[in-house]
Image 1 (cartoon, protein in one colour):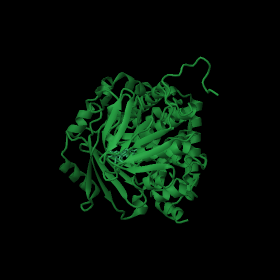
Image 2 (cartoon, rainbow, N blue to C red):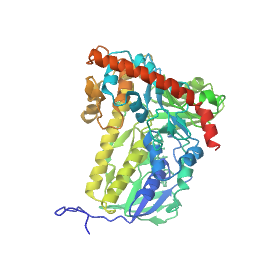
Image 3 (cartoon, rainbow, N blue to C red):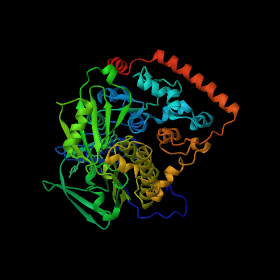
Image 4 (cartoon, protein in one colour):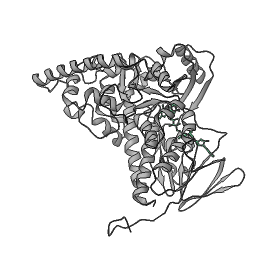
Length: 513
Ligand SMILES: Cc1cc2nc3c(=O)[nH]c(=O)nc-3n(C[C@H](O)[C@H](O)[C@H](O)COP(=O)(O)OP(=O)(O)OC[C@H]3O[C@@H](n4cnc5c(N)ncnc54)[C@H](O)[C@@H]3O)c2cc1C
C-alpha cells in the first residue's frame, strides 16, 4: 500500500538497496552506526576507507546529541564511555577573550540554571556578566572539578533523567573501535579510491588502486576535507569559504600526560585566547588533548608550535599539524550523493559543532528514508540541504559571535578581528544573531527552537557586558522572586556539592565497576 497521500507526485523515484559510505573517520563510522541501527527496512551498507591514510584523528569534544545518539543506537553507556576514555564535559570555559573568563554550559545544564525561567534570565541582563557567573552553579561545579554524575546516571541537577547523558570528551580513535564492535552487518573494505565515474544521474562507480569497481544506489561522502564524491556531482561554485569572517586555517596538536589528574582532568573544555588564534585543552581519562587553532596569515607553523609549547610547558611530546578548510558546501545532497561530516562543511573547532551536525544530518537522512520506504527523492534532498543550511548557519553565527564579542586587542590578529562588523555578515547568517542582539528583551529568553539555547547565546554576548545600559523590565515583585529562587539554587548547589565526587576519582571508580 502506498504511504503517499492521493495526488502526491513522486519525483524521480530511486529505491535505495545499497549504500556505500566512503570514509572511515568519525563521520563515516557514526553514519554507518545510525543507518544500521535505525533504518526500518535495512539496506546493504558498505564502508570503504583507505586505512593507510586514516582519519583526521581530532574531534574529541562533543555536545549532548552525540552521546545520546550512541546510547539510542544501543551501545551501553559504561561500555562506550570506558573504552573511549570518556570524561564529562559540562561546557567550555573561554579564557582571555575578554577581561572576564566566561563559560558556555551544555544546553541541558543551562536549562536547569535558568530553567526556561524568563524572569530569572532577564534579571541578569542589566548586571555585569560576573554576577551571572557567580550564580552559575554548573560553572562552580566545573571549576571545583566535581563529577556531574553519581552512579552513572543521577544528575547533579536532580531534574535530568538517567537517559540524558550530556556532553563528553572522548578519544577520537577509540570511539571508532567501539562503534565498529557494534556493526556486524556493515561490510568494511580497505581500499584507496582513485577514480570516480559519473553519468548525468550522479556517480556510476568508484574504482580503487587495484582496478576493483564498487557501485551503490546512494553514496555517502565521508571523505573529509577532500569531498571526493560531492565535488563530482556539484558545480565548482558550490563551496563557500568562511575565511573573510573566521581567520583560522591551521592547527597544531600536542598530547600531554597527566601529572595530577585529580586537578587536571577537569569536566569542561578550556579555550584560551592566543596571539593568533586560540588553544584548546580537552582532558580525556588517560591524557589531555591540546591544540592551537591559528591563522597562517598571522603566524608561522614554527612560531605557533613554540607558542603552544610555552603555553603547555611541554617540550617532548610530538606535534602534529593539520590544515583546516573552514566553509560549507551550499548543496550537500545532490543526485545520488550525500556529504556528511567535514566533506559537507566545517566551521572551526570552537564549540565542537562538527560531530553534532554529522549526527543531526544522519538522523535526518534515516528519518527521511524510513518515511519514504527507502526511496531517495528530490524532496528528501531538499530537506537535507535545508536542514544542513539552517544548522550550519546558526552554528557559524554562534562561533563567530565568540570572536565578535571578545575584546582582546593586543596583536595584529585580534586587531583585525576588532574590525569585523555585523554588517559584513551574509544576510541569511546575520538573521541568527539579530534574534539575540542588539535587542535585549524578554523575548531573548524564550525558546527559539534552535540548537544553541538562549542562555548559551547570553553567555557569549554578555561576556563583554554587551547588554550594558539595557534596563530590566522586571517589576519589584519579580526581582524579589528572582533573588529568592537564586538563594534556593545556591542551597541546592551546596547540597549537591556534598554528594558529588572529584571528576577523575568518580570516573576511576565507575570504570572499575
Ligand atoms: C583541530 C581540530 C579540532 C577539532 N575538534 C573537534 C571537536 O572538538 N568536536 C567536533 O565535533 N569536531 C571537531 N573537529 C572536526 C572533527 O575532526 C571531525 O568532526 C571528525 O573527525 C570527522 O571527520 P570526518 O570523518 O568527516 O573526516 P576524516 O576523519 O578526515 O575521515 C576521512 C576518511 O576518508 C578516507 N578517505 C579519504 N580519501 C579516500 C580515498 N581516496 N579512498 C578511500 N578512503 C578515503 C580516509 O581514509 C578517512 O577514513 C576538529 C577538527 C580539527 C581540524
